[in-house]
Image (cartoon, rainbow, N blue to C red; front, side):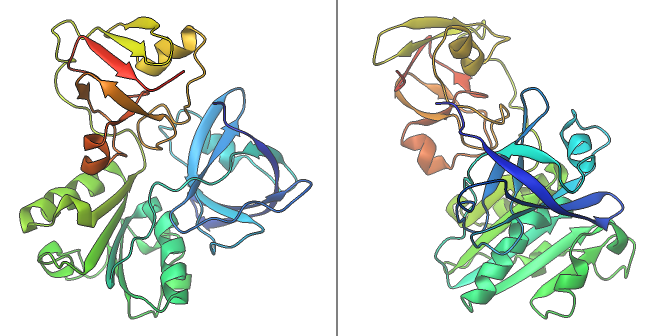
Amino acid sequence: MAVTWTEAAVVSRSAATPDIAVIDLAPVAGAAFPAYTAGAHIDVLIGSGLVRQYSLCGPPEQGAYRVAVLNEPASRGGSRAMHALKVGDRLRISAPRNRFPLVTARRHLLFAGGIGITPLLAMVRQLEHERAEYTLHYCARSRARAAFVRELAGDPRVAFHFDDEDPGQPLDLARDLGDPRPDTAVYICGPDGFMDHLLRAAETLGWPQQALHKERFGDPPALAGPAGNGTGAFTVRLASTGAEYLVPEDRSVLDVLLENGVDAPFSCQQGICGTCVVRVLAGDPDHRDDVLTDDERAEGLFTICSSRAFSPVLELDLT
């Protein structure tokens, strides 16, 4: 189930801030890029096998794709490679996928932390087009380091929260998120610390999980403890063939399947993109992703790149 790659060309590149590059991509040949909905991302193949995910932040329409990339000093190479791109350079990208879509609701509350503005900017444009009710809270260390401020400034539905400005300006979740409302959907995107703070506050305020929609930029929080059978090792069984493979404590299900020639789906290998989701037919999964909802887990969905097993055997719906 390998990703199908399409060749794209860089047709525009600009600096949104000293650390954030805005890159526009267009097809090299043939038909236009597939259309997408707000919240979608693409995989970008960088160098020899390095794959990274970037949210599409332009208007959700067919024709061209826009991404905004933060230059991360601690990056494993993806952001540096993207920042080195020039107009005319080519790279390979996947079709858009959306694990972070807008949902049906009367009111939408959006919370962006830093570069987490990228998918939420596309959501704002779609909500404007639909004349839907929304409020965007945009948090960053400073105005100078926040992308797209000029595009959003002056909109009464957008509130900025910059650490180095008015001390009365910081995000106040008792006020800005408030008590749960059954007609309201909440969207959260940004760095781990920002995400964890908002999700804990939402839980304290009583917001149900199904009202909270999130996309994390980075590794999901580590779950404490090894897999539940003591050693951390377990066996994965493929339902279609009966083939069984031992998954050691220091290897993922995905690693083991690929090593044994199984055509398993994957992309980010961090449990945040949803590409590798398969269905568990038997066994007790130890979920360690940050992409599946509680309902999806209850339905038997499972990320083979990051999650493990509490039971000695986990049977998967894979060929």
